[in-house]
Image 1 (cartoon, rainbow, N blue to C red):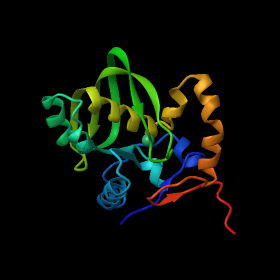
Image 2 (tube, rainbow, N blue to C red):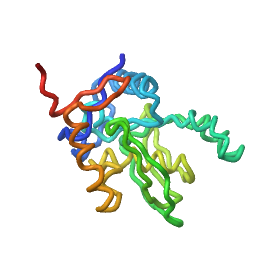
Image 3 (cartoon, helix red, strand yellow):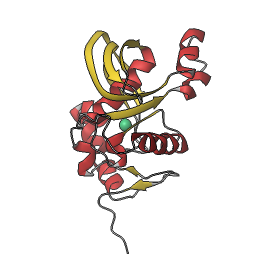
Length: 195
Ligand SMILES: [Zn+2]
């Protein structure tokens, strides 16, 4: 089932997510709904707070980058198959040079900005079967995971840009909260006034 993506300005996307365990009611259904909603919105990642659940769960599917001809074959191959569920993730280490990548977010439609993040991460998490993994990621896979991980900390990519750029997009962000934005997927806007 496609569920609405909660827009910038709603308090839920600012909540720090709580860990879940096997007793969490029907995580499989939540994950399925999130996948459907992410794919429908042409996203490469979606975090539970963006669908109204302040828990430490996010999904990534970087397969759209598999068609990016700017990338080398090896990375395209990796990104085509990088589809995962991260539960209770902890970034254990972030290393390497900071590099800029133009990020967007399903909760913040129509805004894209260069964000600097470190190139390589070590992350520990459990998957949808609550099996534990520790992985080292770099490149765009790391980037998408860092962005989604931030969501489970209540952090948005627009928090990580310069204060000048923040000022420049302030009005646009207010408009998003009010639903004054053109989108072709379901969203929920905190300040939308219904007539
Ligand atoms: Zn996002």
